[in-house]
Image 1 (cartoon, one colour):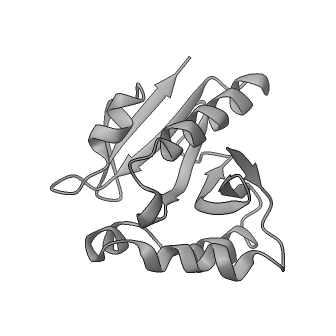
Image 2 (cartoon, one colour; image 1 turned 180 degrees about the vertical axis):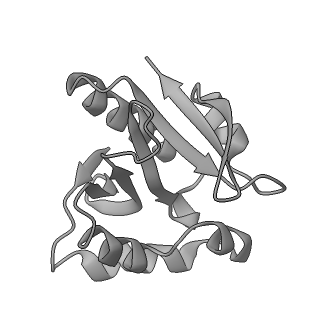
Length: 146
């Protein structure tokens, strides 16, 4: 599992991963094309494609400059393509990001998710994220601190 820069040669394939999500998931996650466009205009965005071998299986984007005043970095966008879900790729990608952030001296990774059926709450909880008690733009905020 590796995190790779998105290039002119890979951007279409990475954008296409969004189309593999279920209808409910597509309502909960901004498509990769929009995320990549936003990242190019956000000074603090760090984004990568998630690869298993030579195949792109997901996408993630961090906000390195949280504006909430809290220490840490925010997992701004995260998705694993539908056919690749349930294989541990998402878990491994978060572990890689956490190790990268720890090495940089970052103390926490924040995420927010929509509550309700189909929520990613269980996934994040299984990784050690804990709710902060804050609601951000209608989403539950959670933190993984080390």
